[in-house]
Length: 359
Ligand SMILES: *Cc1c(COP(=O)(O)O)cnc(C)c1O
Image 1: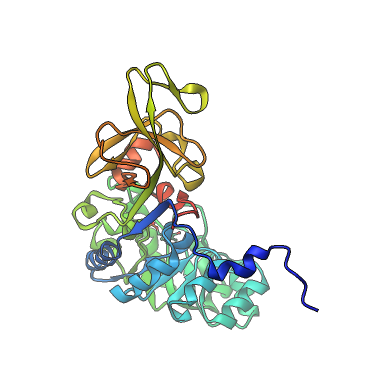
Image 2: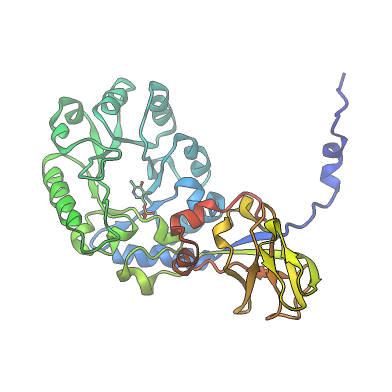
């Protein structure tokens, strides 16, 4: 017997029009595609891949990955095994590497079954991979950041000699500080490993490393942030465009009288009569309280944030845009360099914080 659903609404849901979202994230696919092409050019004599971890830095793998693939990217990187399934809806397994590598036999078996490449980060992982049957893998050598990766001296171990290394890689700690001595030191250490460990391709630079020039290019760069609009190095400044544009609807307009306050802790007091808008976005959507004091915008006109940021809403001054009314949209200025200065958050944080309620 068919159980009657307690949630009758769901039975009928197909026939009901779903309300329109009151916040949206516009992803500029042309900018994303152009950014990849620019980074690919700047990666010569090598080429650019793409870091697509964390749901393409919060912008949505289903939206971004097909664009990157169409632009010409063929080498993709996720961090977690859970990120493999969503990526394989769009790209062949041979184009995907998993940066965290296998922590268990189960992870190694999953890599074998799907055909993605694990990035081997330790002798333990090298042995796990061999025990699972092995095959092409990538190898991360830690040349100084002291996160994931084997120490250079460990690469002489028989467990490493037994690997079939496709991409031999390392990761720079200070690439966004062009004058740091650490860059040259890591480059020298990586060159030494590249000369000694058999591999098909070598890869050192991520977004900021691409700005360090051809010495750091090797065969493959692994940009992430710069694809999505972050300028990590002055050399990239002219080449990279904004990709993410968060927008939210005004869900209520209010007229304040002089002396009235706005929001939690009455943090803003109106000095004169003013027209304000309640905007449908808040810290649950990634617009953290550090945005207080900043502004939304409409056609280039700033609409200052009044008082505190709430979970689901923010109140803004509509004085500069008197034509705006309930249901109209305003933009959160999200050019990453400026938004970073405004909030103290990095471009990485600004993108990956964006919540799940965007339509
Ligand atoms: C995240 C990551 C990248 C991409 O870094 P960006 O700074 O976003 O360009 C490249 N390589 C590794 C190993 C990473 O973890």
